[in-house]
Picture (cartoon, rainbow, N blue to C red):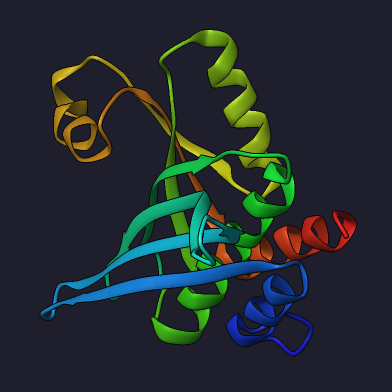
Length: 175
């Protein structure tokens, strides 16, 4: 990995400094690849000295053992620190791919449920370094990809090192 990029261990330490827990759940799918779930939570005191975790954000995806194999699917973030939590999730996803897989490029779908929301997603993903690959529409040729991604929209691809660099910068700005 490039020396100016934070490692997954460094990102976990940054999360702890913010009072957050960063966890990755990785499953190996035989020789096919990996399943990935990245979560960020905060400890919250409960009653009778109980402590519980409050999930602030998560991302689900999978990786194939190829240079362009990282697929990022569902991301949800909630709470008052959503910008920092989102940046942390993106950074951890890219760092994991660079450290543990041959993946160097990632793909995702800017889903087209609503035109206004779609434009916001495309702008957000561009800020992370993703570029459009192709539109997935209603044609028969797009059906397999739409089934895989769960809908229509703009399929985008980005460089994992650049995505890590950009999300780490966003994380630093959120201190």
